[in-house]
Amino acid sequence: MTKALAMLESHPADLGGVDPEAIAACIQECLTCAQACTACADACLAEADPAAMRDCIRTDLDCADVCEVTARILSRRGDAVGVTRRLLEVCEQACRMCAEECEQHAEHHRHCAECAEACRSCEDACQQLRQHLG
Image 1 (spheres, one colour):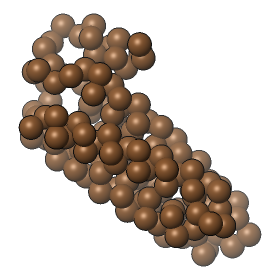
Image 2 (cartoon, one colour):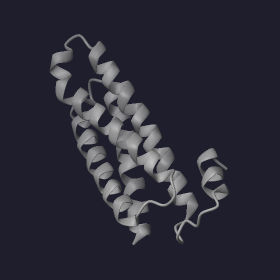
Image 3 (cartoon, helix red, strand yellow):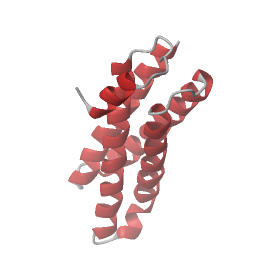
Image 4 (tube, helix red, strand yellow):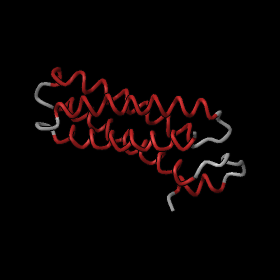
């Protein structure tokens, strides 16, 4: 059992019928993606020509921020489902955009390939949770 799942299950408030494992999985994917995007941006800055990686750096940092906020909101109870659903949509979009950008560089930069994979996984987890919310 992950700590996120243990925390969700220990909370006295009801989850409103939402599977705590689905929420915990999405939280984990968001945190993993945020870390990958942050590390990818840093690696892009270390490349020989970081100016050529400007769009990648920007989408990495945007995606990392959105994923981190999404994980934090999902960790709290009492949030209106409509807000959560919208946030998951935004996170999906940020992950999709970042994955698309990183995939353009993946052949030459392994960090971009790794980041794109993390983004696609997070995008999928957000979509699955959003669909579970109804």
